[in-house]
View 1: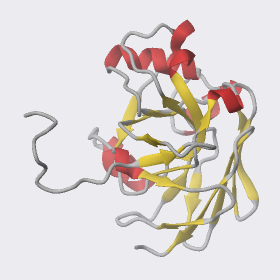
View 2 (view 1 turned 90 degrees about the horizontal axis):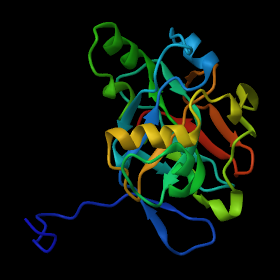
View 3 (view 1 turned 60 degrees about the horizontal axis):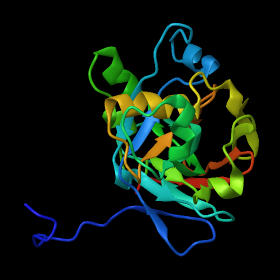
Length: 238
């Protein structure tokens, strides 16, 4: 089949806006690293001094774009009664590659955004307990809220600033980016040994400790120093 073959039906292409530009970032894949802050690894039952990095994916259309200065409605998903927030710095790949060395990895980053890895924790844990894949807990509709991308030229490469999350104004997660076990550059290097990274890939780079539940009516505010906050209101099931 060729790219010129007619489509049976149109499929929407998920995109993320880029600050200060008319062009948008087309999402190819979403990669997420698991347990990348030591305290979070411990609260999830892992030993951060022993485990190599591991990754999982969300579908590209899991993104929910949230513009700065707004509070977006985010429906509480089906099948869960234990819905968790996880605030993350998101790195957007602008230049693809394989076997990228860590000391050149940041050259492949187009920009950064604030993101949330929303999680149906009860479903994730249930699958983990029986050693089955836990995509059902991670890879569902709107499970990857994200703010607009800021090019590296505007914000540099965030490396040591604060990363926090508040629920109804109360801080729940609070750490700094330099507490990552695997840096953004190391994550890119590791991923590129397993996959050909392509322009349009997003990497959710891990969450600090104190993940926890939200219920309809709660307002989440996700913050990374140097980027505008991302705010969601959890609504009743859609």
